Image 1 (cartoon, helix red, strand yellow):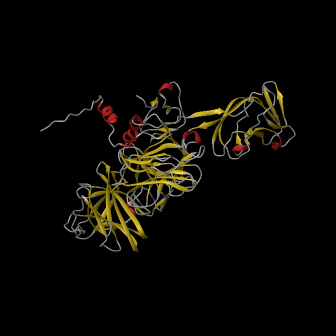
Image 2 (tube, rainbow, N blue to C red):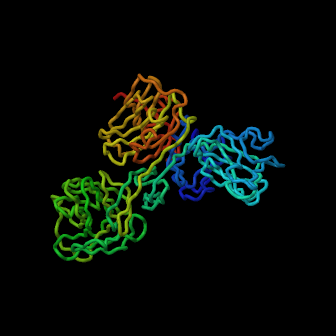
Image 3 (cartoon, one colour):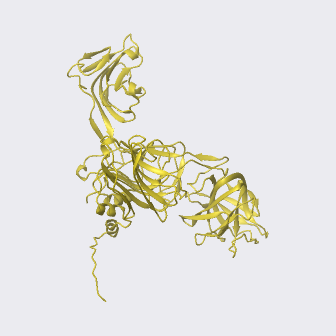
Length: 602
């Protein structure tokens, strides 16, 4: 099989580093690439990789991640060439810039006796790039319990207080090369066998300055710590989830006993919720022939999305309304998982399994919402609230209410006594110049938008702010674009109107001089046969925004991403972007299918 992940890890059961070793190259099954802390979704990743041509230089799948990084599968984690010359000091102190050091048996002595730390150092300057990650190794031969630091990495400690082999990963922060020095202390340290190599990988730097929730592989909502990327399974398969900043203004999203009762009783911790614990609320109407609801004061204006998880009991219809004006409503059928009648508030419903649905109402008005109301109702011909008398026993269940400003709902944000904000997510700085071909190639992504909100959302291969290759969700409804700019001048701008960009879509943008093409779901949708590409050494990073500058970030779901260093053939592009994978089908069925057809004249 040309593409296959070989692994020996507890897939689907993320564990600390040491369990999640993966390697992609079938010829390197004895070599482990251990650059990620957590791994999951191996089945999905294995299936994805079976259909990717071997020509990919970068492949990202929802598999591996660490605190602050989304980890790619191709290329595997590795090290570049040696950057230190004469690291064993066999040629004395040649190639080194130094101060207050001397050669001793077995290495070099950084002697700080009677001197300030800034005057005791060794240094080499060539081959380092700001922002890149490097691996330093050295042997401590002798020490008086003193520490050496890397000046070029914000004085990162090397740990030379003890004798032995030391390994330090560091990020270069200046253009001064590598400087090993003593900061303070009237002591000396002897070191030898210094080695520095660049850590070569295509991992994305990830940032989110708050916790967030996701739906995990078991289909349960769970909290994810700040800085940890999210593989989300809301749709049943794993995807990287990137979202904008949003605030849940509902102060008690789960404790509905804090809401105002309107002829209904809220009994908390009465049912297993979508997070798998018994913390959902039973909502029971009273015997009065009145509105049977709970409400919470909340003032918002403009684009507002109101959502709540609900599960049927004896009753199976809930209504979300703006309590200021009862004519604004949307009903949800919890038996059939359908949106019922509505007025002014648009409705969506999402199946979360085990009978739970997320009921979403979208509201826009220049008038302020003053409070939100969740009502139990019954089906009616016009969809309005039906007043009825409960028996004090029959009920339904609710969980996780949310009000956020925006045109679409985002992942659930729990609150308990105050509004809570989930920070925006960023993912950028993947790859280097060796992994991109400036003259030709393909940018491929299997993605879904969070909404058809007609804003720019982009992912891009970049070489500065004026040289870029992009896949774009455009400002026209359901628009997909492939875009290439050289030196600030547009050389290709291809587009296609999809039926629904919120559904998983396979997109490939091929670029080559006078040969540009946009493929979507197995078909070539747009072409351009006139335009140049880039000069050698231009492209150097991949980012989930518009050329690395941070604007127009891609918010959405990513199931797969790949970069190819050559323009694939039409047959390869058709296979890559087709919605049906015959290889995957045959693998799932555990037998090989030979496809054939015949024609018959009738």
